[in-house]
Length: 428
Ligand code: SDX
Image 1 (cartoon, rainbow, N blue to C red):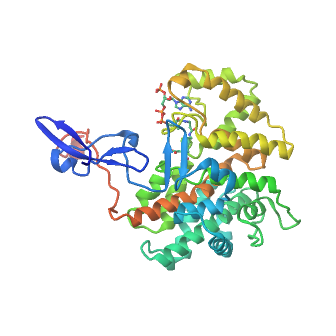
Image 2 (cartoon, rainbow, N blue to C red):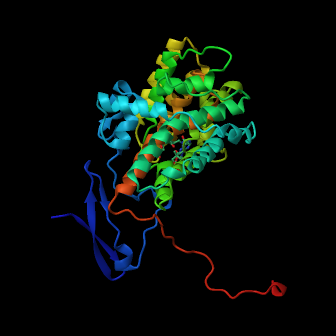
Image 3 (cartoon, rainbow, N blue to C red):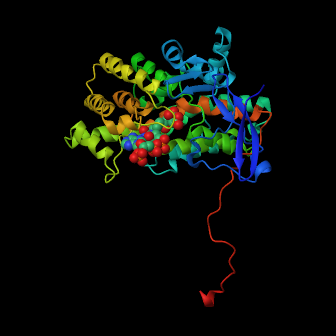
């Protein structure tokens, strides 16, 4: 007997079906609520609202669990490469050797972007934020590839997916080179995915650039950990924009813009700026934590807190360990890492954070690694976007394949003025 929920509204009682997921999560299906009761639900920030049923990523915020297609993030971080994870998320299973080789070849084949992108980036101010540059560049891909915009044509969708995964690193590197006045580097297809990105970002036409395998591995790990996170702000944006049947490039451009926000993907850069400010102002960790707690201070402990995780973000645990490994291998001492560890130790014992169940999230340590490998902080969120791209694509594709697909259109409760006559201008 399927479970149901009873809801009493006034003198009316309705029965609503309860949906149970494969990991035991339950939801009250309110699809018929308004038809039966005339009421809608209200849930600012959607903290209690499920937008869809999805088989891509599972998060248990209470237990600090994260799984991509059922595989624990800890195993993927240790045993997979980012391209394997991208394949897993988009196609639903890990590729065998032949599939992975074909996938790698296809991505390598699509890394170059149209030559007109040089003038495209050249038209932007030098201090253009890389996320602004990348969101418009990705949107502009729709103008260069009018032949692959139909979201329901399987061949066009496949080509667009490969083009996006292949070209986003090139676009990110172009945005970076433009911002430092250096020539954009053509991708070198003899290099692996992450090594190619490092080459395009830190190489130059005047000398050879050898990719440090330690740095490439650290970046590959970062991308794996950022690859998907169920219905976060940017993924929900990709789904909502994509639900209008617009092309994939436009939907991903919307995701990039949503990720840019400091409360979401922009937090990794905010963390580094916060750690650097503490260092440069000679503040103690305790002094800053007190500021982050104060209602009279707008400071927040950036990289702490999460809408879903009310325990450790498993990605933060992996990244904290990776910070020490990478810095040790690079022979780099990071004062910023020292400050981050001190802040974490203080906050985890402080009632304010304990009561609110605020723990380090993925952004708390990721910036320390980006910083250690020479990435400027304004590029951190663009790196996050490269990692998150397969997740966005996977959710967009899952949405289009959903038999219950329909355009997303939330309702509201109106609280404005009731019906009012127009006042002519000479009477206002
Ligand atoms: C990401 O959704 C995802 O999955 C996102 C992400 C992904 O992979 O896609 O995991 C990536 O975006 C991680 C989050 C990065 N953002 C930050 O690190 C910014 C700092 N964190 C916060 O702004 C906040 O914790 C959020 C935005 C992450 C979550 O916001 P919520 O769930 O709306 O929680 P809230 O703002 O209502 O906070 C609850 C309480 C408040 O205090 P009270 O009003 O109860 O007194 O906790 C306080 C907040 O003031 N609080 C913090 C805090 N985070 C929350 N106080 C100090 N420092 C913080 N970081």
